[in-house]
Length: 126
Image (tube, rainbow, N blue to C red):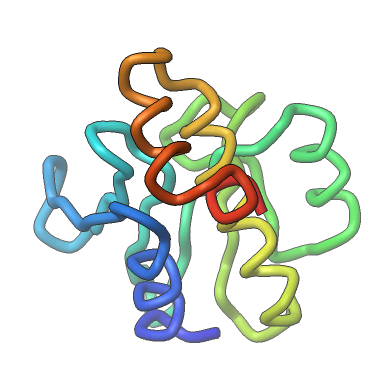
């Protein structure tokens, strides 16, 4: 996946939207008010930060050389993924979906419940 395909996929998730709170060249993808990803280009290579379960985060770093500890993030819970073509698109989509689901699950009941009722758990937590 390239930058544009990744951006489109992220924004296709329910109530996902793009913000630029840090720098104009770093897109922050949010669901409601919570960040689930960043997307940028550095030295000609697109990269994204995704939230991840700590055990899975380390496993992905061990498997893929394009998965690194989260740049400018909590390295226990975030990975930086280089979109250099070395990771299959299906795996990238799975990582994005997992990050999105972790963020939604972490929301307070008042914020999470309307999402679950409107979209269904099978869509939010796929």
